[in-house]
Amino acid sequence: MNAFFIKQNNVLKKIPYDTVLWIKAEGNYSMVHIDNKRYVLKISLKKVLEQLPSDRFLQIHRAHIVDVLKIDDIDMANSELTVNGGHKLPIGRSYKDDLIDKINIVK
Image 1: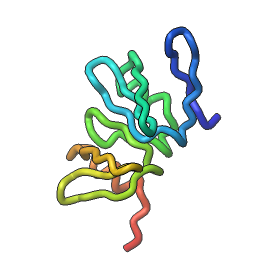
Image 2 (image 1 turned 90 degrees about the vertical axis):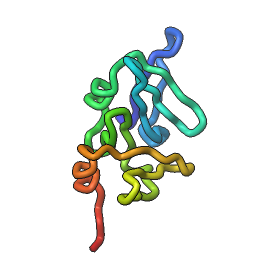
Image 3 (image 1 turned 180 degrees about the horizontal axis):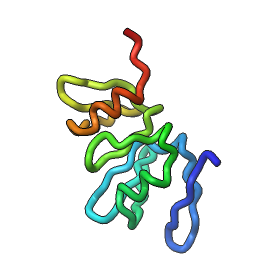
């Protein structure tokens, strides 16, 4: 399956992986950012990450998960990346190596 479901007001809403830009932790909640929409999940970022395909979604910061297919550029000097639409997300020091391993760099 190329999607997951989230519960919104007793309705299960299908969220295709292709629409997810990033997921941000806010306390005990996770915010799924999709284009100009945001869905709130009452689940930790760690639990969200465990349920997503690891070949596609990667934690880049203690509070951020990103779809690696949506990364436009990575600014190594400022430790941030840009996803579709120009949204800038921070890259945590301890997550930088995993990010570099995950992407394909032509040298």
